[in-house]
Length: 74
View 1 (cartoon, helix red, strand yellow):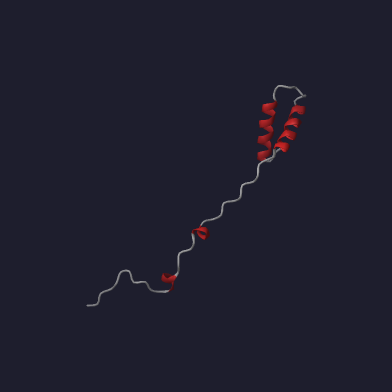
View 2 (tube, helix red, strand yellow):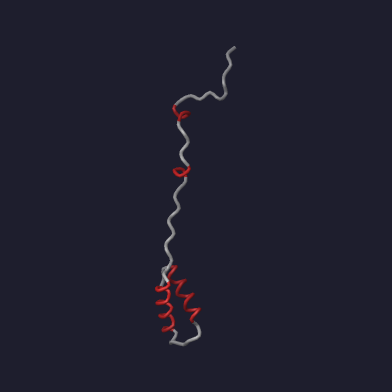
């Protein structure tokens, strides 16, 4: 009776090397750069003027401007 080897490799698929890890994974999209400080400052100033030019809310204006620019809104 002949013995059969369980690990015997046959056919063209057995000689193919595994794909490199870089080819098998999908590339993640490159992150978009955020708005610059100058862009945020301009938008914050627009928000300041839209509020009537009242002082005392510069931090809120800045954060609102940053949020809007990150989301692509104005």
